[in-house]
Amino acid sequence: MAMLEISHVSKFFGGLAANADVSFDVEAGSIMGLIGPNGAGKTTLFNCITGYYPPSKGEVVFDGRRMNGLQPDRVCKLGMVRTWQKVRPLAKLSVVDNVMVGALARTSSLRKAREMAMEQLKVVRMEHRAGFLAGGLPIGERKKLEVARALATGPKLLLLDEVMGGLNPAESEEIIQLILDIKARGLTQMVIEHDMKAIMRISDRIVVLTSGEKLTEGTPQEVVSNQDVIDAYLGESHA
Amino acid sequence: MMKTLPRAAAFLVIVGGLLALPRYVDNPYALHMMILLFLSISQGESWNILGGYTGQHSVGHAAYFGVGAYTTMMLLQAKGIAPWFGVWAGVAAVIVVALVIGSICFRLRGPYFVLASIAVAEIMRLSAINLTGLTNGAEGILVTDLPPFKIGERVVTDFMTKVPFYYLGLALALLTLLVTWGIERSKLGYYFQAIREDQDAAHSLGIPIARYKNIGLVISAVLTALAGSFYGIYVGFVDPPTVLGLDLSVQIMLIAIIGGMGTLYGPVLGSLVLVPLSEALRSNLITDLLVKSGLVSADSRTGQFLKENLAHAHVLLYGILVVLVILFMPEGIMGFVKKLASRRRKEAV
Image (cartoon, rainbow over all chains, first blue to last red; front, side, top):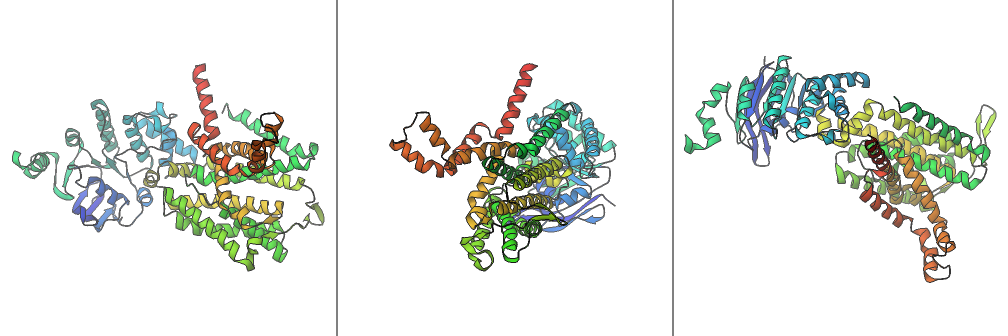
């Protein structure tokens, strides 16, 4: 059984279908890449999966449990947590306090939460930033803070929304290593990314969305050689 | 750790001094000022829990203050129920009111929540004016005689001087500080601040935001209601504009905004500024000072104008003060002090 089963999910805003009949499975322990041009409905799909929008149609089943209609906090408690494309640091709290907020999903003890938070800061190599205000961090570290905070909630499935967006090549490489480390620890991940080289390297499988619909799905090699994908990205005249 | 000890020591010294004060000061006016200060601290700290820590800027806290004050006073007047029992009825009533308000208003965010909070407080005020059978309407409720407070047969106090009110006020202010201190050091404080900083992020990190906003509101409302009950029995009179008016809601909020929202001692600093200021205005102290210093002649038109109007100008001056605070110290006095301290530390390094 797959860790996450998305079957026939649609999301309409008025007459606009942001997602139309999207179906795919994410296997436990794997990394699923989610790509597509701007406005293809990738973030909307994340919102539908994590409880920010109820899907208009279709079903999201996580770990054998139907998730439709659950609020984001319940989704998180059940083991699925997302990061934000536009980072959302708790600006006036320190870096370690930010991660502690995540860890408090698992414990009520501040002392334990602080230990867990420091552990996650080590994972993203930001221990030295623990006492800094989150609002003052540069973008690369804000992105890593998002990941540390999400990991602190103790998820089984981590949904990363463009964690490499806006980063320089060295920072991106660090994030790639981080994602592979997280995979090695047995976590399942779903990754939205525009950087094609990066997504090809890390993904076990890739789903391509265009205009809200699933264009194709397969291994990275299958996806790059797919004529529809080339058309979608480069325009049909290049075909 | 290094900082905690001297800070705790300073706190104990101040509290010890305040406990001993009535032994050395028996001037009723001075005690009255201290009682107003305690009341203001408890109002500001209570608001701060919801507005400062949780980021829900209620402009309707008069509703909770008024419900506490009215319930205690109505029970005292109509049924002769002593306020130290009546106050718990006030607390129960305010929890119900807060949960009703919370379930409605917390569906809204930002400015919409602010508007809804004003609307609800206005509904309470208009109800108090119009439910004359229950509240005595615009005339208000006057109860000057409090039953003596007994433990067993021993009369602890008969409330004939200001001293028992002084200690009650002090206890109330300390209670609100203690609750806030406890929140800062618990999961609640982290969750409240996470909601303030980013509601959607908080939600994704497993925080049931509606529940935690309601918890913040109930704590804040209960403490505000205690302050309201205390005000009622101290002044001996409540009517709709003084305990349910929009003025009061704004004043409660200003204590925390001026002192520093989301900080433990912010509302204390705010009270230390606002209480003397409003008293100086009310008693025409500022006009007298201007006249005495020779800046303005008492007989001149300016002098006459100030004497007649300055006493009523506290709302105007509050407004000016808020503009100044927002322009020059957006984090309140507390934030300003912290900034100065960190600048000094940097220079020292």
